[in-house]
Image 1 (cartoon, rainbow, N blue to C red):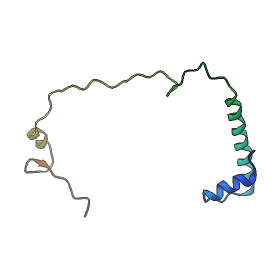
Image 2: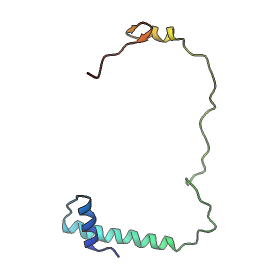
Image 3: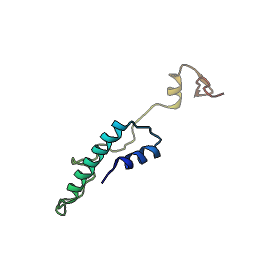
Image 4: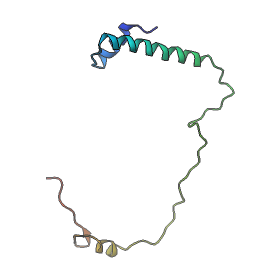
Length: 94
């Protein structure tokens, strides 16, 4: 059973200042949630297989494979600024 005092204690621990009307509403809402969970706990789930997701999923990633790519010189050639075969960028940390 959730009481207004329990909600007030939890709010205090969370450093929340809740008005009286909100405390009453939260008490009612949390009580309803816990009652629903109690109903769910009574269900027989012994024939239900555990799942990590409600939909059947499969790996959608492609296989890794080596493909031709740019050489270092070709990549650096596209840079706006470069120095000694490397990209140069503005300094962002002093």
